[in-house]
Length: 209
Image 1 (tube, rainbow, N blue to C red):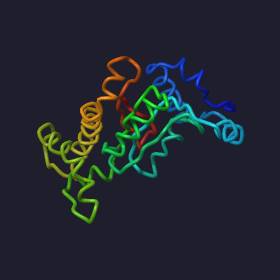
Image 2 (cartoon, rainbow, N blue to C red; image 1 turned 45 degrees about the vertical axis):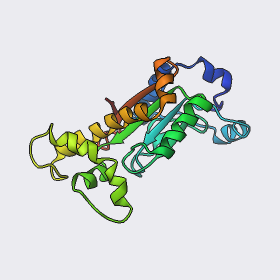
Image 3 (cartoon, rainbow, N blue to C red; image 1 turned 30 degrees about the vertical axis):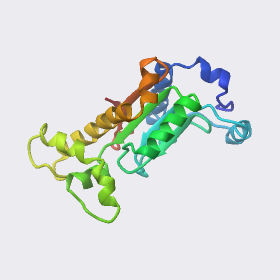
């Protein structure tokens, strides 16, 4: 049973590689419906005075991708930043910097997902209120996919959507490194790792990119 929260001493022993493997092991337990039992009350009490999460996940807001659940993580284990389309902006960058530089997390996982509604909307050039500006963040991935995939460059083309989901994750990682010298330096020093994956709605599995 998971009944002990991560402490600073434990966090200090973790490496980016070990944290990534831990998350993938959790996803495997989720897929196999063999998730760990969690003593939530114990973890609540232990984390009142502080937190030492091992990773931060930048994910979409999609209700079908409850991050802690699909990674089989508990209270105090991971930070989660969510925005439709799982892209970075200045607030997300600040949150990632806090997670790693201040709170000691060892891994940033940018997590896209299969059949993402925000990506589909960007593929179709949807314009609606503030959604228009939000989708502009995904347009670079749309343009890149248009050069890589044959057929119609819209949401009716499943291959085009899938490629755009992947490109959006990869481009987000690139921009995180470009726009955050702090995180770029931490990764260069081996203190953190910045990785990307796509959660498959059809299987529950996270496919690493």
